[in-house]
Image (cartoon, rainbow over all chains, first blue to last red; front, top):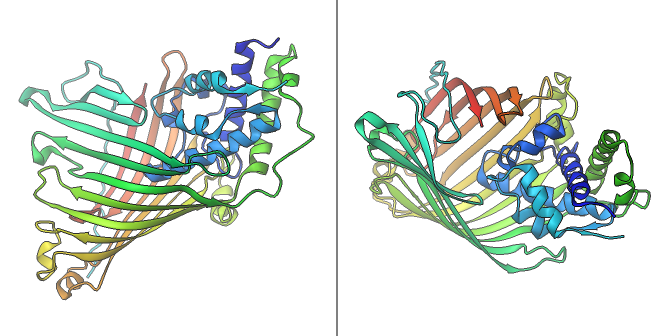
Amino acid sequence: MPTEQQKVRFLKSVYFGVSDNPVDDVNPFQNIEEFSVALVGEMRWGVDSGVRERSKLRFAFNYNAVLKQFQIELPIEDIFSNLRDDLSNGDVVNIWVQLANFNN
Amino acid sequence: MYRQIILLFLVVSLKCAMSQEAGADSIKTFSLFQNGDSFVDLKFIDPEKGSFGVDFKLDFKRSLTTSRDDFKNLYFGLSSNGYVTVKDDQNPVNSIISELKLQAFPFMRVAPRKTVYADVKHWKNFIEDSTESKRNEELINESRKLAEKVSSPFYLFLNVHAKHETTQQFNSHDFAFGIQLSFTTSFLNSLLDFPFSLVRYGKNNNARHLDVSMGYDYVTDMQNTGLATLLEGESAINRLNFKCEWETGILSGRDRLILLLDSYHFLDPSQNLKQAGKHWNTFFMAKIEHILNQDLRTNSRTKVSIKYTNGELPPNFVVGHVLGAGFSVEF
């Protein structure tokens, strides 16, 4: 039975990869350790507040779609609403793992 | 005649993200409130003279409906952001913008060609392996490739809004009612990114969607704004707005180039407005950021940047040209 830590590690790796999207790159970090401790607000969402919001929404759609490929359900609303600038990327993943449905 | 004056100066500053007891010359910041993207910070600009300011952003939303993607894409929002100081002349920003809006977020998006990939391994396969770091790397690479495949190349957004723009004294302000259409796209990435890809040797440091907004505002109650004397008695005016922002990687994996353009155009401007060159106002920013160092033990990042700005922002459209360099430590 996978542990919660294993699920966290899985979601974090997918978060890192999806945010490093070759056609919509918002991830400035070189490795997952740096990425984990950095704040969501430090990702490259944009300068203008409207731009930042739209970038987060696109990421939420992509993350939801990629997780579906791995048989994991995590609603777009839950992804987007927890992308808070004051949280670390690691903290956000800890929230998502409680909301996600890991299908067998 | 449009006057081009470039002020060259070098600014070296140390910025603290959290409140710390620092040297007497730095701005000390204390967080009074933080919830999501909303915050209120108290900043001590000149402690010896008791001068301080409040930097704030407040953002509230209420969803109204749900899209077929099971995402609540229509919402009503109220926001306000600005920077207020005890002494007006110490306020470098001197702008408070509050907005009420109804937004379709998104209004529509182009679906990717394929949404299901049967050859993707079940999540359990990535967990049930003793070689953790190898599996992590494989999973990250797989996620990157899938993200590119499932990404929509085009999103469209629409909002209707009422906005109040003012300086902190509230004696220079206006109201704007209007509509804004925004789109983001990756269709132009190859073209825009081509010159920067030639000078990029870092891996996985690519472009973001181009973000474009176009809007119309009916701006009224313009008494005492910087433009009021040029309006020849008119208290209201029609204004078009065009904004564009884009970002990509250059050089190493730690370097980013940010480009931002914000332009306002007044329809049917008065002769005085045209002669003063205020009927078309543009703000442009080009910035290069480099992450110099990251310390995982203290969770701090050291950045250097070079920024060039040129132009004006509402409500007073005061011209400024700045070329500067900055150094910051974030922790």
